Length: 237
Figure 1 (cartoon, rainbow, N blue to C red):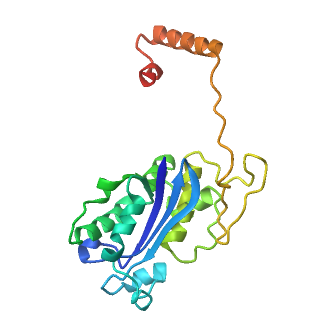
Figure 2 (figure 1 turned 120 degrees about the horizontal axis):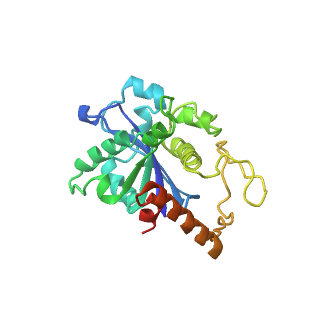
Figure 3 (figure 1 turned 45 degrees about the horizontal axis):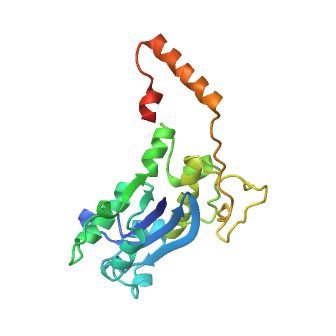
């Protein structure tokens, strides 16, 4: 399974107001492992960046003057994400901006949804932690993920942090200090703790014949007591 954890930075909040993408950062996961394969690009937006946006990400108009436009990098970017499941925090924001950029291309290749499926980690976090703060910084504190390098927002750094948050939030072990072999994990220069890419796969333990028989007997008893089919059997079929 190939997933791409994605984040963007923009000139402002609303593509409907003419705001544009100025940075894209992507981190590749394959079978829930961070591969080290990334995509990162700054983009010339052909408009001024709102002062409030600069305070958030620190990217200035001057720093983008020599960067390519979205049309120049669209093919490479789509090639990187096509066929993957995108993992995005507050997906409607980023997807809305990317689709806005795609609509402005002369060949109009389609929308993000035509190339990828999408997982919104903000919606996922709200289901898991209702009534709590669920922005990326709050999730890092909750799952004990080091984001000390995140003084300003940055698309690639935020995508790297979100990858660790997502793996932990969905049952991974990105927050543990030891890998499956009892060895301490390496810490990269950004301070983000990572599982080694070459760690062994998790063992899959199959039930015995006796365990399957006991399971079926238990389901029979539940059905007899409730007078209706149990959910597990409908899922198994």
